[in-house]
Each structure stands twice: as structure tokens, then as C-alpha cells.
Length: 416
View 1 (cartoon, one colour):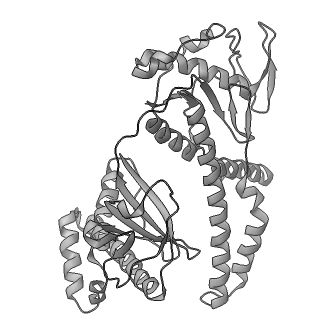
View 2: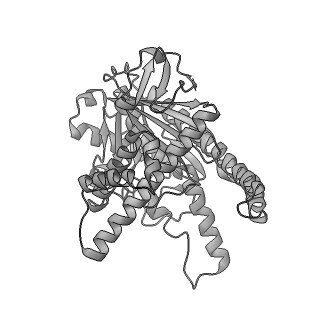
View 3: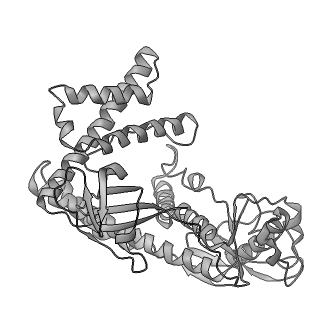
């Protein structure tokens, strides 16, 4: 299994200058290769192979105009060509969008393979660097000196902070002891997550809480003259504000996903279509301005919640812990089905937060009811999948809602 450790780095002035040159060369090689590849395909109908880009890089280093490319380590430049080749492979396979040009104002990174770095007694030596790069190691259960990374990634965020990521190959971890817990999780915007136990995890709304400060910093950038020192300082404040929001969001997602994996053997979530949920952000020309602003606010809240990232964390953490993660089809009517008797409503408006079942007269909280139905459907899916860990997954409590068996619920992804 491959894992990574990301820590802060504190280069001195000479190392920062060398890393800055490396980032610039990586960006230049990416952009120039992308431009020539684009021109070759659209003007002459020719496809460019990795071997051709490698030969072109060698010729660039021999020329007078780009001879400075030889002043930095060749490994990050070669890795850039490999990454672009992979990016186009993913694009033509339909897994990613068309590769874009890199901007000097965004996040910068350089990838070093084993031939371009040394980890000697806990000190990191990079190619073309005379002194070790100081890092703040924050993993107490892992000894940096004994670490054998396969790749080291040095990055610089727009706010000026440097980071080092150590990618290592490790043995598969042992499965954690079973807890006997099962939970259905209904994700949303008003409440970030509603559990089948009735617990609701509030949405921190990180972007909304920092929106005023962020808007103030962005106005400061707009007032400054482009290219001036004050303009750069103002842009750094905006980048710092974004970094704080990003770190707070990531911390919340990690804490929540880790808690769910630690406390439950089976976790059931819904296959949300986040792209579809945010497709109406721009609105249409015939919609009133207020309606467009409301849609934009809703879509901003959906993106701020980072539901896709939360699912990704649940997937890999459940796999490492030996838990079962069941993803239910997005068309399963979890909100409209009574979790007690299985009655299915014909319609249920989005603004209806609670409803009473016409059949059994049970009063339901919309989100709690959806979470219960997801758990019931997840039990059926996990049992039918015949997973090795499924022996501990059994129907408990009242009988399973009829709708859960009629819907042909499928396991989109199951880890364990």
C-alpha cells in the first residue's frame, strides 16, 4: 500500500532561490510541451509520444535560449513530461478534462525520484542543493531516519509556505477489531451529515464564516497597482485566507471520517452527484437576478461542504481499517420512504423537513429517515455482495422496508 507524509519545510534563502528556479523550469517545460503538443495535433494531425517530448527537452537544454534548464535537477523535468503524458492518457480515456497551462501564481511543485534525493539520518538532501532541507517532522509514531521514500514532492503554496511530501510503500495494515456498529449517513448542506442513530453533525460552513474577511482582502487586491509590491502583499493575504479555510475544512473532514470508521464496521452513504447538484450555478438568461443569486449561494455551500472529498476519505480509511463501505445508488428514494412500514410517497418537496407517514402515522425527520433507509438498503447490499466481512452484517430491529428490496440497490463501491 502506498501512503504519504506531508510536512512543512523551511528552506534557507539559497535553497528557496534554487527551488524557485526549479518550479519555474518545471512550469516552462510543462507549458512549452503542452503548446507544441497542441499545435502538432490541431495543425498537422500528429500525436506526440513521451519519447518525442523527452528528445525535445534534450534539444532545449543544448540550445542557447533554454540552456538554463540544465541548472536545475533533470528529474523534476522528466517527471513533468511523464505527468503530462498520463494527463493526456486520462483525457482520451474520458477520466479527466483537457490538460491546462500552469500559472506562476498557483501552487508550484517538483517531483524527485530516488535518484534525485537522499534521506540520510533524517536529513533530506535534494539534487543541486548543497545543504539539507529542514523539515518539521510531526509524526511521532514514524521515524524519519528509517523512512525509505520512493518519491519526494516539494511544493510551494500561493501564500509562500513550503511543504515536503514523502511517498512510501508500506505493508497493508491489519484490520481493526470489530465494533458491531452499523450506520447510515445522509449527507447534506443544512446539516453536513445525519446519522441513522438520530445524531446530526452540523455544517461548519468554513467559507461563509470567512467570507467578509476574504472579500475585504480581495478588494484590497483590486485597488493595488498590478506588479507592485503592495499588490503582491495583498495577493498573499488572499492566499493566506484561502489556506486557512482549506485547512479548517480538511481538518473537519478528517476528524469526521476517522470517527465514523473507528466506531462502525459498516458505513452506508449515498452516491451523490455533486457535479449535477452544482450545475445550475450560472442560471439562465430568463431567470430573475435574485433567483440566480440564491442558486449561486446554494451551489457555493455544496462545494464548501466538500462532499466528494469526504467520500474519498471514507473510502481509503475504510479500506485500511478493514471496514465495509456501501455506496447506495443515487436514485434510491431514501427520503420519500417510511423507514417503519416502507410506504413510498409520490412527491416530497425539498423544503419539507419533516413529514407524517399516511400509512402508519409515524412522524419522520426527513434526514434521519433517509439515513435509516440507507442503512437498511446497505445491509441488503452488503449481504448480497457476499463479502467476507459480511458475516457480521445482519438485519436487526424491525423488518426491512419493502422499498429497499424492490429497488435493486447496488453496491457502487464496497471496501473491507
